[in-house]
Length: 403
Image: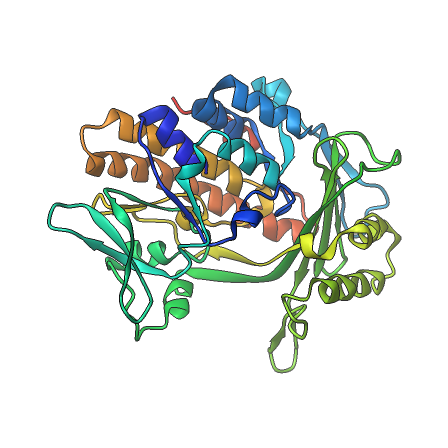
């Protein structure tokens, strides 16, 4: 959505969005959990939709004042004030995912979005005139969508087009295992994440504008919560796989639960948290207990093994968001970097003499920044789970600007 809005508003380029979810789900503001937008993400939003879009995001979320972290063995939480607004003039904001998506959708004509399609794309074909058609995995080898001159892959971590870019292919054949080819470029970090939004504010025992994090002594469970706009609170629970010390076999949390049975997932998660017998994570138990099961978001924690060396192929395909650089979520930068991608890509297409040179410029800029972010984020995540002091690299993150 951000890329389509940026292409339209910055470069004057129209696009068509293919989304496999239903029309109803696409317009549901309760879909998904939340995201943290920092000064870099806000600057990107300003470039995409002007001051009005940036301010609307700020007004729709909660301006963060700090983070309260309780590590194993610590009698009192570590309070870390958020200095983003003081340092940069722009705050960090936590906003609901569905709300931000609607803001971006409102930038576009409804005809730009085709729902209920795109889930079976296996590649693309280049016509004699250089235009492109998308190909599906159906046996009749049917081609969907009209001709275009650029494919923007925003499919997330399980991106078909990341594989095609990295392997220099145009198609995954019917007799190939698509899932295994895609996963070849992805690393599972051994955790499952469950998130949701609860329609209430945190009570008065919580500092206004603060996010909260609690870590189990063995690092196996991490609980997070915080304000997500007036009348809304987010929570997120990360549960590590358990490795048998004798045989080295891992067992995944929820592996014996139907991943589509959200009531069973909620019940299993509550049992897990209550079994910890830890008063410090009661805030998380209360929030999970109040959650509507089918509004919970569940995903494995995965990262791209490598970023680049290129995020584009032949001037025909370009990767944005998690398709380009899925990384550890420990700094909460995946959505911010996706917004940066959108703004940079649109500016490159506006300012270069050809699509090929524009994509090369975009790729060069984004690979270098994302590689460094991936490294720093992975290091921070590993240290946090061990209860070790983590480096503050927020100033490096937030100093980004489109110029």
